[in-house]
Amino acid sequence: MSFERDGFQVFRSAVPSGVAAEWLRAYNAIPARSKPDWNPVNISGPFPEPLSNIPRYPTLLDIAGGVFGPDLALYNFRFVVKDRHSRGAIFTHQDTGYHVGFQRKASLFLALSPVTRENGAMTLYTGTHEYGYLGDAGEINAHLTDEHPNVTPELEPGDAILMNSALWHSSREHTSGPDRVLTDIIYQPANDPSGIELLRGEWRCTPKAFLRGDALFHRSRTSRLRELQKSADKWEFVRKHGLLWADRDFSYDGSECFYGRVAGDHADAFIEERMRK
Image 1 (tube, rainbow, N blue to C red):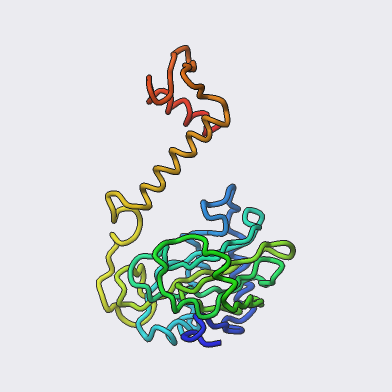
Image 2: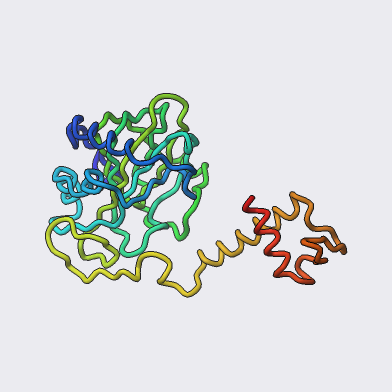
């Protein structure tokens, strides 16, 4: 496999198995999450040492530097796991639609646990990075993935995959075996102002913090979708729990309200309180 041609490359024993085992013990010592993130496979930092130092590990920097050159920056670092919160399959997608800055980025997935077809290995669609950014983020139609060759590498602790962020990929359902624990270290050249940390060489630009987080846009397509989803969730809750009847009032704390027409703010407070229970 060739990173440039295929969009990914597998590196066996990128990190000694003993080092990977040490990092897995450190990961397992992190206080258990009580509920899944909005993305159930996502475990975000900040992380304690030695986990926080993983992106700076010399052989990993060598792998990324072989693609991006001597000046390397970090875009993001997280873990992607299949544990009791996230046993399901992940649909086919590309990561570029979730990023800011330049599109020249790559994820390094380092296995801290065994990665098998049974515990949620990733499927990679060879060559699909050549299509570039698809213009949106979401689930890619199955009939398109059927037209492309794919591989599902199984990994031992210490093995790694370097993947172009534009490559189409998915992951299988966890049906048996240990929790699947992978790093997702997104490396990029140090001339991209969206970088958050210089890892090797020199900055070739001035990083701009405003490119990250919610401060960039006053209003955007994404924020509008969040507003619409919140409204849809609220109305679905109202419908499901029988809190709204056509041309009728409902009572809350002795006050008569008609949702959306009379005392709408009062009704909103009532519904949101009920949704939190």
